[in-house]
Image (cartoon, rainbow, N blue to C red):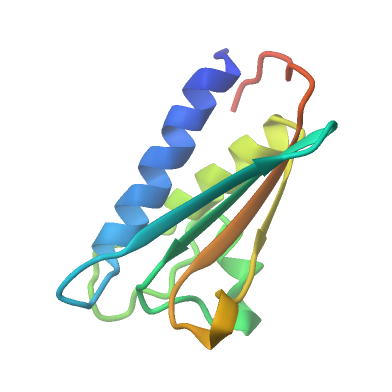
Length: 121
C-alpha cells in the first residue's frame, strides 16, 4: 500500500517517460496546466509528440496495448499504470485533442479535493 503522493510520483514519471520516448521532434515540449475549484483538482498534460488517434484513446489505457510499431520500446504498460492509479485515487482520466488543432498527446485528470484513501495496485 502507498499514499497519494507516491501515486503522483509514479503518474508523473510515466507521463514524462512517454512524452520523451515517443517524441519525434528535435525538441520535446511538455505543458502542464493545473487548476482547481472547491471540489476538484484538474491537471492537463500536453506534449508535441505524435499523439494518439481518437479511435485508440480508450484502448491505450489497457495493459499491454501499444501503438509503438516502429520503436519496439513500448510494452504498453505506462498509460495503463497512470489510468489505474488515477482510478484508485477516485479520479477520472481522459485523452483529448490538443487545443487549436495542434499535434500531440493531451491527457486530462480530474481528482476530488478530499484526501484520497491509501491505495494499492
